[in-house]
Length: 114
Length: 113
Image (cartoon, rainbow over all chains, first blue to last red; front, side):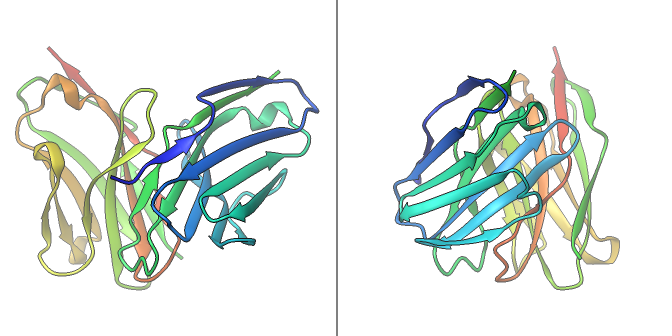
């Protein structure tokens, strides 16, 4: 089974802090994703990485950056956290040649910014 | 552009009753369609998918969905609800060979004893 692990289930940070959310997958997937989940809005794509050191902005990249130094790890960075970034963050990965576009999700990190 | 509409943010059924969760999509290319389920405090788990071929798709836990191109719909059904089905359900669409999944806003299913 594919395993996508997010390092923290819950995080509480203060406004202005730099925040790192970490995600690791164990299936040698090339593609990895960061989503944000808010009630009534579903999941919105923040960033996508199609290979090591390669990234592409999603629909809501403002206020976020990402890092992919190794294939298995994809980090989401909030350079200066703000209260409107309080949300559930979900990481996903996808198999190479993913013509069926099945994405596998981690358990999520619920971030509160105070 | 692709989009997904899920009718009803909350659906409540009695245990043993039919479950029907509605999903309509728009897509300018032949779509791939998905239903994901999210149990409390967990990530998303794939329930079923339609890519090509048979339009009636069976998934896990007794769920199925039918792709109706003429109605641009992909409704999720289960003949008899179980308490363990209580969760949030997301419909999603993508184009073939596209990396991007477009999600609906989700439907929370409540199952009454």
